[in-house]
Amino acid sequence: MKILFISPRYSGGIGGHASMLADQLSQSGHYVKKFQVPHIPIKNLKNPSFTILSTIKSIVNRESYDIVHGFNIPSSYAMKYTKSKKKVLSLHGVFGEQIETLHSKPVSSIAKLVESQVLQWPDKLTTDSKATQKIYKEKFNLDFDVLPSALDTKQFSKIKNVEKIPNQICYIGRDSYEKGIDILKKAESKINGNVVYCTNRSWVDAMSVMKSSSLVVVPSRMESLPTTVKEAFFLNIPVVATNVGGIPELITNNETGILVPPNNPEKLANAINDLLIDRVKSDKLRLNANTFLKNNMTWEVILPKFINFYENLLNN
Image (tube, rainbow, N blue to C red; front, side, top):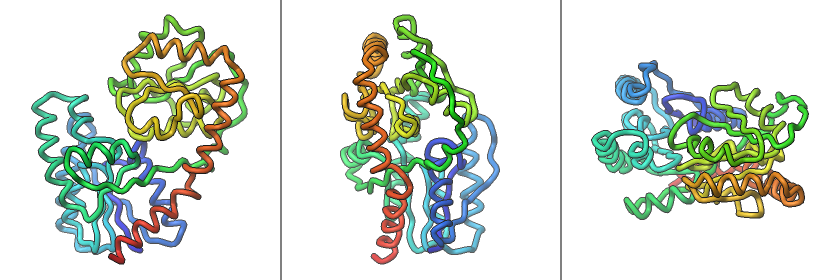
């Protein structure tokens, strides 16, 4: 298959997933090109500038593909105008809700209008979580295929052995409202341990901190299928996370981790403290979680699902 991937960036979140998927497909013998254009490196101008420049490039580009696959709404215009047999658009999370949480009402109103239009363009829509699938079905009566993003377990060979630090709690993620870092900071004075914030570290450094920790905390207000949870599962570190978005698809409460309500510092602190002192429960959670990850979230499991998805799309 000849496939074009379109994403504003190829690192972190859905962009990182696109990059890894492209590499995996290429290693399986398929031709995958990653569409790239320069854009303005200023927070509120990155996506608009990418949308404009990528659309222009796709209009003038005469190359044709079997499949063009856009990742997130800013990629949809370039996806629309690229010549291809089939078009796919993937969203990790509900775009309109994400914009509403992070920006003003006028901005979110425009974003929701754009969202309702561009979701009509692809031949197929995909997401990585059943939670997002359900919301789009209820809001727009649109059918999304669920194709989870996998964890590249081979990259963990870069992580050296480290000493465990008793009662160390690890947070990995952006210092942003949707990630709930402010909730964790409010809970911190009630936590019987030391919280280490990895908000601006390299991936290797962040994983080393995680590996040395007693548990990982994910206090998000909104999420799709967070990579941090999968990474903790692979490294055998128990997780306390909020019951939002796609997190319950990874964490079965008291089986593969602990779930707490969002926006609740007290319950977050209590769950962390309980797990820090209950070694038997902690061991059970991390072993169950590691098994779940290896059975469901590796590229060995996920890649054939993507290949079958693309092949079925081309054949129908």
